[in-house]
Amino acid sequence: MKRIFTGMLTIFALVLGLQVVLTSCEGPEGPAGPQGPIGGDGSVVCGACHNLSTDLLQKITQYEYSIHATGGTAIRSTTASCANCHSHEGFLEYMETGTVAAGIPVPLQPNCRTCHPIHETYTVADYALTYADPFVLNITEEKASFDIGKGNLCANCHQPRVLDPKISVGGPDLTITSYRWGYHHGPQAALYVGEGGYRIPGSMPYPATTGSKHMALLDNGCVDCHMAPGYATQSGGHTWNMRNASGAANMAACTECHSGATSFDILGGQTEVEHLLDSLKTLLTDAGIYGYQSAYIYPGTYTADEAGCYLNFQYLEEDRSLGVHNLTYAKALLTNSIEFLAKKKK
Image (tube, rainbow, N blue to C red; front, side):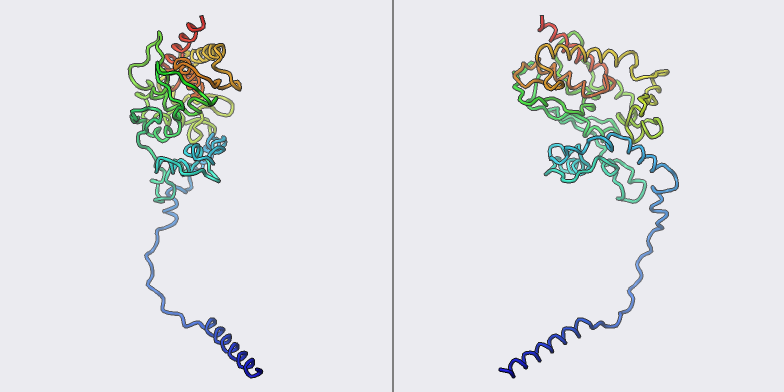
């Protein structure tokens, strides 16, 4: 037995020694391979964007003043239904596939890489727009496309969500179960192209041609006004803000046509829309349609016209331009809604 044990120890020692020898051996270094191609000059490649000017820094600083950077744009983006507009990752996925498969656990706000293909070519081409094709409104059955130039990118998110239940002029009654029924917070593109309102009949005709008068005057829609040179890094440019921190309006784009204008209330248009909104709000409140949690529709069953009047109010309230995006269309929607509810009240 002792011999067997001794023999086993000897074999184990030999195996262990062989392992040490084999793992510690290193052969001589082989000959050097052929030299690879010479890379580009880093100062030239990177300098296409990261040069000594303040152009890029200006854009970044302006962005930091924007609602995209400072607002709650990413708060609800962990859910797939919100992520397409409330997160960088969801937007890119939606634009490529038409859907967002799942919520985004750690979402980013919309940022440089949302709108530009940064560090793909390492040239100024990286400043191009990721999605500049004509946009299609989600709410229209015919799925017609609209082209507002560079503003197409903005419109992919700044448009209404699909209503549930849907509504049609003179259609059946609607049973609304959610107080959040309506167009959410981004209907600007729809108003700009003259779509999405409930065209209730009334004394004021709706525009015969689709779209705001601005569509014929501006090559790039949203971009031409919201990115016009503004006040330092507080308005215009990549802030997209139309007012600076003190509330002063950025009139750079307006005065090209409206010479001498000092506010967005050109020819009293905003004042008129504000009065119309107040009047419609009062009528909706008196009719028991509006006022749930002070800002929403009361769940219930309504005629299409009643629900349509609320939709017009909510649509133009959420637009927040007080008619600037499409004054004629906004006034017609509000005026005719007021007439309907006032007549019904008598």
